[in-house]
Image 1 (cartoon, helix red, strand yellow):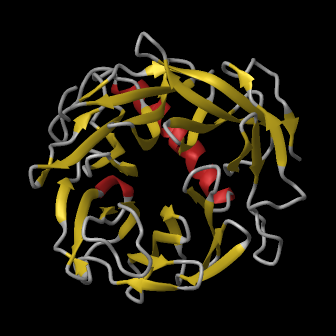
Image 2 (cartoon, rainbow, N blue to C red):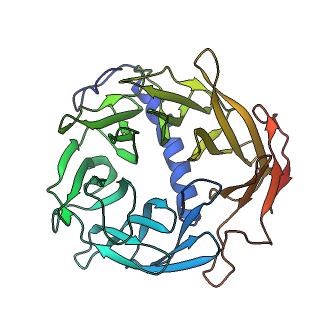
Length: 385
């Protein structure tokens, strides 16, 4: 692992990497613009779902219990954590001054309340909030951390975080200053020992890299690359705590295509990123089913969604142990449930809040069996139209 270069430092080969990075970022932006914003939290055996319908987020709990949260003008949702009926939701909205501000909500199956954002009224836009911690109903726990991106435009964003103590958030701390280019796709997790961990996508002057930082000994560590500097774009990270460490997945350009790679954090070091999916694959969700990571990702050809259970083999490498795929034109990721040990259930958010809720919807859901190993090229177990 190596620290990021100083802002503005260039390296040979920047033009091809810039073009490849721009191509995938445009693709991701188009998918985001055309898709409903849907978040999933909790174990796949009892998922909690938040779907944004214009200015209102609908939080759906097991058993079809619904809680509607009024977020405000041009709302976005970016993070959901849940434990049973308790949940925390974070996102952003446009304030009266025209800048984007954080929105933080705590709730349960009966209602919700808004939590004041850290640091008062910032001078710059804030978005991409990530919650690090477990919900505890309307009363937040002292170990809760929120992190976010701050800056007017993706090319000038920095990473900040604040801890919740004594009924409010403390003053924000700088995790990563603005660099030579964009910083986007902030993701977070809390390790088994309570350590907050962040990963995100940062342009280093040549190409996009996946970088990370964690909060130890009272401070955020200096951001470092997750892996060696490879001078090819790495984009679209997802992250989950796993065992005593963590697991991250993202898409890496190999000169012709983007393919998903995974790496594990053991102790203070990340393993070498290992490819686990085919050409044209992009990760969307990383869930935990007990101790087993469950990766949800999209493939371009054929256009399908795959759910893959990841296991660590005797060699230490992470591999796909079982998978299930469905052909679908939908660009937004499905909600994934595990109704039985051998089955995977997928469904998509409704286009209207007046439609039936997604969890346990009898119509529209697709139940497919696990199959050993990764999905075969061009073969799926079902289709959604």
